[in-house]
Image 1 (cartoon, rainbow, N blue to C red):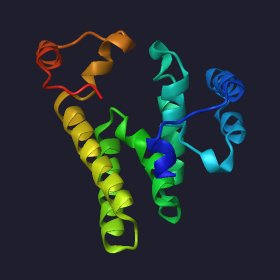
Image 2 (tube, rainbow, N blue to C red):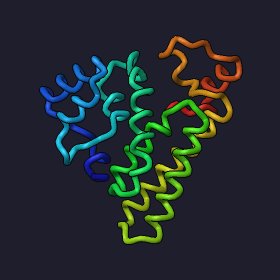
Image 3 (cartoon, helix red, strand yellow):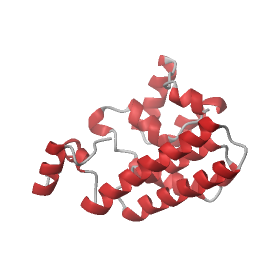
Image 4 (cartoon, rainbow, N blue to C red):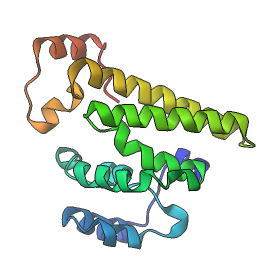
Length: 172
């Protein structure tokens, strides 16, 4: 599954059209029944890939709700499926969600380092932990992701303007 994700997700155009219809109409359960079992991916990533740039955050609340429901059962999932559960927490602008993400991925890293996972899986988990920590730092400092402000019609603070201009605020 990691290799599938890392190589870039490719979907049949007909499936994409149907998935987009479901996401736009907020029928996420139908959208995910369309995905084959071998290509189960989080609503978070699917939303980011399918919806137009100005609407990419429209399903964040539903996605996060889904992830919170799945979190307690995530340890029974394979590594890469678990990452899909954690991504909505990483993309949340709520600090507590950021902490949940970092803690979940730290636990995952510890698990793969002491388990029988491949070195590729270990590196994947370690990289995800790095990204999670970098996301958390931004939410801790600004209370949101400033790189989303223009898309969401929010005004930047002067500190955000400076950080976005000089590159000290990452825009993942």
